[in-house]
Image (cartoon, rainbow, N blue to C red; front, side, top):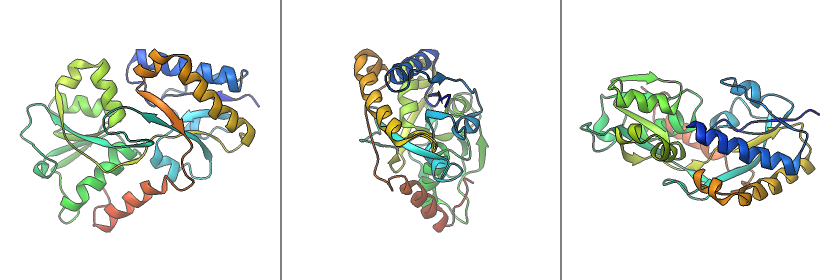
Length: 263
């Protein structure tokens, strides 16, 4: 099999993209020297559904929905960013730095931004946080889909939206590498926790190779401590079999509260 791999999810800046690519290259050098790093651009589902996929990162929401049965979890990264705890992470509830909103509850009638419908951090966790506050299935004055966390933050900074939910790892990377954007916004709270973005492989990848990947990830992490610090990366673990069921539970809780969509 001509295996392919890619780690596109946290490429917040070009420097971070180069660090993730180097980490991946070191991992493949140990576990699968013949594998090729492939950039699919915005075609993430094409990458995730490729039978040749040896290693990539996806979001927990598609893992539990559109990718169910198509991929297997290799490991979940542990980050040292604020909001992370072991394999879990949260989203930061964010407003403009000068916005008159001290809390999510104060955002009733405001303009919300979110990245995309299949995002756990930008949509599902946000929806779950808003659900207890909604009335008749509505809370916001309007909702804007932006396409990415960075675009959601930019919408706040430019005054096109008032509040959003940002993956706390992404938010830490923005604070590290995009100081002007970070200075234009501020956090007002946190969502509930959920398992972080998993590293996955196609179902076609043999169990022995999955085990080799897990060992190779640890070796690659330890090979460059400065790179690990830049990536806020502490380690990896293999999550329990049903760990990601929590994402569906959070979805069901929002729906049970009469709030199936951000609105």
